[in-house]
Image (cartoon, rainbow, N blue to C red; front, side, top):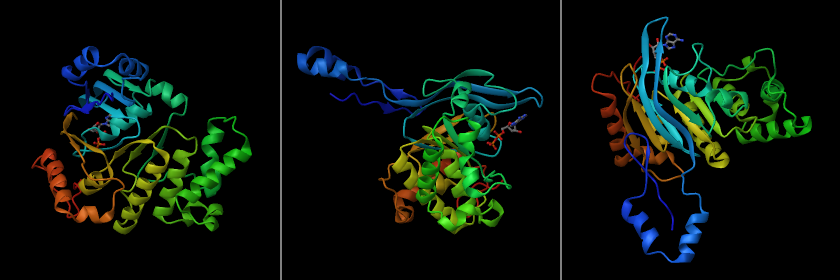
Length: 311
Ligand code: ADP
């Protein structure tokens, strides 16, 4: 019997109802019981946040006021919220890259590790709005950097093969592989940044508005590309975005944060089929989902025409 866990509104996963557990104990045959016991009943949770708070002492700012969330392995989650609601702070805490240490309170566990352990074991890849490629290295060298920084024991030839495979996956024509970042368009730079984030094959991708600086057409093609990569690689993705339509189009669940101090105002599950097709964003169902997110963001927000929040 499959033990199906369900998402609760507060971001945690609910145990199966008592009647199902009772049925297993009382009614099921020995064989079924044995089969069940041999299965791991716990859902594959990739990220667990328990009442995570962050207070920045130097500026007396309470950035996060207690965030609890469970993310399943392989899930695509977007974080959306007003400016200053702690989205980037949350990503920084997960990646252990903030300059003010870990959470002030609460617990974070990712793939059973603390953020510090995860960072030290190169357990995540990260991408930002700016590609942050090193301007003095060519594309291919930029992509190989994570192996060097990690002092990887993977043989050089295998490293090269992996980067070739990833560059092909993101559709960057071979002729650009020897270019310097400044010679590439914004979209191409982000493709390279994604390759670099995936170089060490981490189970988790953290993305902070990765398409925020791109024009609309490029942004849309990058969204499709990321969805394609996600379906091929089965990574867990946590992506910050300011665009309601981007959040609803791409993710399994949209986590809406409240005004500072950031708390989860609502989690909206996206019932659209996979793979997502661009035409889905033209449907009434999609418009309804977007308006649920917009509503959760509160009426005080100024929205851009494309549904993103004005800074
Ligand atoms: P968002 O990404 O939702 O726009 P941030 O996480 O960047 O929000 O910031 C949340 C709040 O925390 C803001 O008020 C910001 O000024 C503050 N903050 C973020 N990082 C720091 C820091 N390193 N030191 C002091 N305050 C910070």
